[in-house]
Each structure stands twice: as C-alpha cells, then as structure tokens.
Amino acid sequence: MNITCNIIRDLLPLYQDGVLSDDSSRLVEEHLLQCKTCQAYQRQLEEEIEAPKADKNLAGEQDALKRIKRTILYKRILSVVIAVVFLSVAGFAGYYLYCEKESYVTYEESGVQVNEDGVLMVAHSYSKVQSIMSPDQTTQFFWVSNTAYERHREERDNSVRYVCKIDEVVPGEPEISAPKELREAYYLSEQYQHLLLFSEDAETAAAHVEEMKQKSHLIWKKEE
Image (cartoon, rainbow, N blue to C red):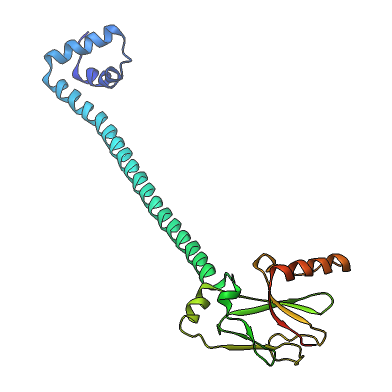
C-alpha cells in the first residue's frame, strides 16, 4: 500500500496525541524520516499546539499579577482605615481626658474660702463647685473639680469667683444656696466625692455624716 503525504498528515494529530498503535506510529515515523514536506507540516502542527498553551500560561500569569495588585490595594486600604480609626479613637480619648474628665481638687489647691459675711468664694474662676447636703439639712459638704483644660485656663485667670451665700436661700442665684437650718459647711474629703445619696435609715445616715465630717475640712460654722 502506497502511504501518501495526505494520509500521514491525517495521522499526525493522532500521532502528536499519542493515540496511534505502535505499527501506525512506526509508519508515520518512517515517512517523516524521508519527507521534508511532512516534517515541515509536523513542526507547524506542533507550533499550533504550543501557541494556546503559551497564551494560557500568559493569561494565568496576568491573572496572578492582578490578584497580587488587588491584594496590595486591599492591604493599603485596610492600613488607611486602621490608621483613621486609631487616630479617631486617640482624638476622642484625648478630647475626653483633656476637656471632659473631671478631677477632684484638694482643699489646699481649691482656694475655697468663706468670708466674714458667709460668702463662699473659689480662687479659680473655671472650677466647678459641687455640694451635697446632709439629710437633716444642717451640714453641707462642698468640693471643687475641674478638667485639664480648665486647669490650663486657670493658669491664666486666677480671679476669685463668687459661689454662694452660706446660710441664705436666694432663688436662682447664687449657683448653690443653703437652707436656713444649716449649721456647718465642710470641704469634702476626696473619698466621698462620688457620693450621691445617704442611707434612708436615719441612724445610718447620721453616722455616715459624722464620719465624713471627721475626714473633711471645716470651712464654716454658724455663730450661735
């Protein structure tokens, strides 16, 4: 049987894929050793097979590069978000600590005084004066608190501020006024600054008031 080039070219794709029988493969190989035209056709066929593989590899590399770029972009965005959140938290924390968080001011630093007319004065104009009254309305405890911002302002303004007239009730003014039953005024000890209510039991409340008086500083006592 005469094996023509057309037959060999029909068999070459199967030969490239390795699906020919051994006899058919030897037949193709023997023909290729003698036929330059079929050799050229085989090389062309191999190039056509390799080209898609190369394109596929290139596409794969491009996809991998895109994934790497996306990952880098996401990390940069995440870094920016984290930085913004951190700066925001730090800013809010700094604002709270400097402008909002109040600290107890000791008696010595408060400048609290009561003049001969029973007027309570504070040396620092930006301090906040607070008070709590005993259940029997005979003892009033004062204390001063301020923020870091207010302390900074006080360094530039140490003017004395009128607070209240002790033992006199003035509607609306001053900021803090006392009942007529008042007999004593103290500068409250720091350990009691967060006290809001006394016990409902009269004896327990009276004992607590006496304890607070012992640990606080007497600043005014009504003359008999």
